[in-house]
Length: 616
Ligand code: GTP
Ligand code: SPV
Ligand code: MN
Image (cartoon, rainbow, N blue to C red):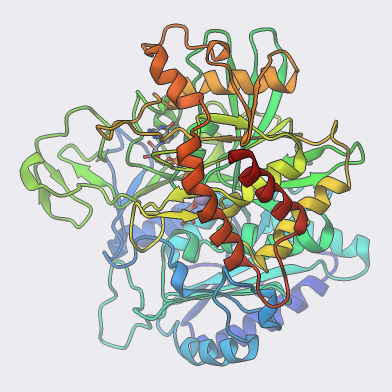
């Protein structure tokens, strides 16, 4: 392979940024001993070359170009299939800054351990240096990063998920010259930890049983070792855009959140911008790509996983999607549930851990009502419907550029869109109603802080266990959770109730006694969105309950739905028994959050007291 040596001049002008980069690249190369260094330019030609490399390597399998042009299947090692939360560390200088929801190791100690692991870890491999930008290059305050990785799959995926290469370096140089000093960038180091010893063959999916996903918020660095999968390895995503960015956001007065961004236009032509935070594999991509079943409503997709919300001079929160691509859950995606995603992945897509059909296409559970008679499953083995196993891994995913999605608007403003509503949610079979509106910002922050959800395959560990997941950020808050909750309150205090988004809580996942979902979900979630927009506009009354404003059943537009009235009532009403059981769990949760002299903010404790009092 002939990549470009990193030291070759890229743009003329200031060289300061290269000095900072060069020093770091040299240092990393001296530890990791790669056989070549490839400074990625972000060009299409380079993308094709890297893909060709991984096809030769056996990491990427070309799909049938007549069915899915320029698309590939990747099968990972079966033990490297999701984020590893128990191997994820927030290495703040002070342990009390990591708080009770994060693993902590002192920065020096972690760096010593990991520097040992990185010794010779890229031996025999190419080290890619990938300058990238989170957010538009034209934004007032885009955030820059450089990922060093020894994985071609990661290099390819980074060019799909972010803006990379020469254009980024040129912008870093331009801004450095304007500032008179080098722009800062997040140093993101990644190695799979599998050197190629002379005379040995490389594996299609090399990874190391020892894994570390370490963050150094004080110095804005990320060190990742051992995994090649998703959020463990594509360091612009969860590591940078949530964990490190949440620390930046705290310092700079904004919010970095695990949220989709949706633009919704009513039949009357009024446009709303909505952010929603649901835990991993709980419906963000699906809501971001919603095809409303209510006539006349139109939805556009601005982001599906991460939102950076900055207060504008008008006091409103302006949201940008810092990413350029989707890394979406495949299983459950179909023409019925998410036709927009099905159009999005028709071309230029890398599928990871899905099944392969006889004609060289992909398949996953529930993509079609009846599975094909024969497949090659995600392990590479023959599969039939009688196999009794999943053909695709439950956390199998598609990696696709934003511009493949037919509902992504062409003209998203670089500094974001003003947010009218924030929705929290999770996967709960009981208790949590279909939708509730917070009384005000503080109550909304309380709602967010109590978010709970059944765990999914997006992270290694047990599936289906209900856990608290504040703002859907439990695994992504880069500092003490109580400081994070206080920061949310502070962002509210810095604005006015009129300018702030209205806050809601939804639950698409209530189940009946037979275990079936009670709410149809997907496109029909537009019915709940309609009520939310009516509440924003003050067009519809609501019932005040201890858990916020609830819809009167007759105000939810269920026209055309086969929805028995008693089921709608059950979905929307306040469940006194359920909440009586829930409140002690929230109390326990709050008790577990106070640590290191940092209590849960008193305003939120007051909200909990108010809820408990409301029940009695
Ligand atoms: P991450 O990418 O892990 O952050 O996930 P996500 O929040 O984007 O979740 P996604 O939209 O990919 O949905 C995850 C799973 O939930 C898929 O299998 C979907 O089919 C399913 N799902 C999404 N929305 C709904 C819904 O409204 N109702 C039901 N029953 N299932 C849904
Ligand atoms: C999530 O787990 O929330 C994801 C997938 O979006 S990953 O990029 O692996 O974090
Ligand atoms: Mn996510």
